[in-house]
Image 1: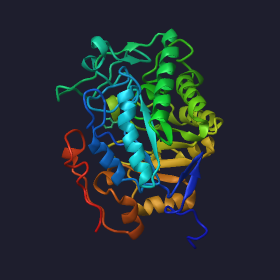
Image 2: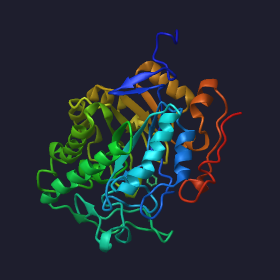
Image 3: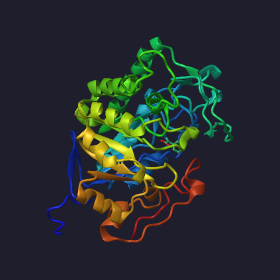
Length: 365
Ligand code: 8OZ
């Protein structure tokens, strides 16, 4: 087969209103190096600048509000100081010829009273406590606190928080935003019947459980234009908070993808497996999910070079998002292009700390 006629991992593309230089995406990567108030330091400018040859950078998950925060030292995008710090990053990425969207994050129940204003309980669709652990400012880990169920009349305020963060991201000079509806955080807690036991219009049948994510995407698209808004989903991820899957993942997520497809978004981005674990894509028909959505599709989770080239050539995906490989290989695009060896990232420096394991991974000579 001639690669000239097949979509190529290294060729430019338009995704909605965003033009990208290649089909390689830097996946959102939590690195926990912002300060207590979620403000990035100049180190983050250097970190993102080094990785600007990605066709598209998706920022690390970024809190839309104090309430949406579940891990210490993660960045925010809701104050003037957040905007100023992110502006330096987006300028650096643009100067280096890259594109960057801001991933808008609300953790829902994956939080702890010590991270919340006045020690309040985290909010969630229903009062069901998550398992696993969150990182606190004391540098220790704790089980997420028991959340309280959001009142129906609080949803308008939540949508206003998303709108506010979306406007802040625009002021900070991003090329667009990605709504984080994956990895068992707030929006996915609404989507899955395992974490949503509500009896109002935001709970019960799939149409109701997907109402909030669709309202959030619609609200943010009014600010940005739909062609600069993407969505991330993870239909079969169990890892975060020991969250059980939905009782019928294909029916639920196919419905959601179809509804999102009507909005003319920039892209749908899927974690096709177990975050931080094996790729279990065989359990779920992601090709069909892509077809239901009908627009640009970014595939993620444990892709290597061969799989990525094949997925793009076959039309399975339009772009491939790489996470861990981007930590240790700032010039990942160049290495994939040349089929050069990849460096392995050191897990000990994934989260927190300074330059070590963050900005000190070298590019190829
Ligand atoms: C790793 C550690 C903390 C948070 C996600 C935002 O899973 C995250 C995250 C990843 O989407």
